Picture 1: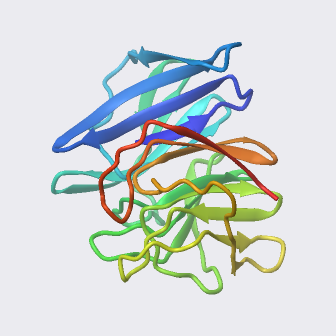
Picture 2: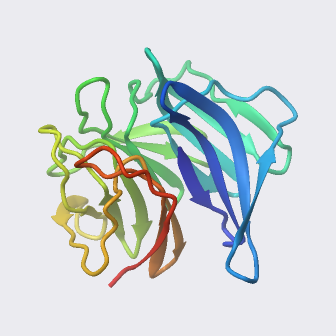
Length: 239
């Protein structure tokens, strides 16, 4: 599934996902209450919902949810879906464009200024390319990042000049420590380290940035045992 936080930090949105052989295309909004609880509500759009999927990405931008890629059984997507919160409608970006990421799933995506940055994933082999979706012009661009590595099944967010990747699996199917793209120094990769009570369920989880110094992680499974499904929220602070 995918999980994003609204600009005013009052709501989180959850879309799609899977449970066993069942794939979902439903959209939920969670509202933060005064007692720190979240009230979930299913959204019924004014038009038809997208195809059910898992392994996709989603970002929030100016009252829109932008969804890219994912898979459903034997089908892999590279479509760009835009949900208007104001109009309560889904729209699909036209595919007749010059630059478009190849079909993929378990990639990462995050807001970085006016762009949605999509990196990596697999289809079926791990990918190491990076694409930028201009959320204002609604078009794709591709940039080459120094030291790009083939990662999949990870999430990312942009903060203080860094795109942070967390929960990655490399081309050897091994769990790796978080890494970052330093956008302040010619866009290249650097290592990043988590300390303290590190979540053990960094596989198939949801993540949302809360403010400039912390983010949330929800759900996931243990990457070693591929079991121990979690319904816990983690609050992680950036140092």
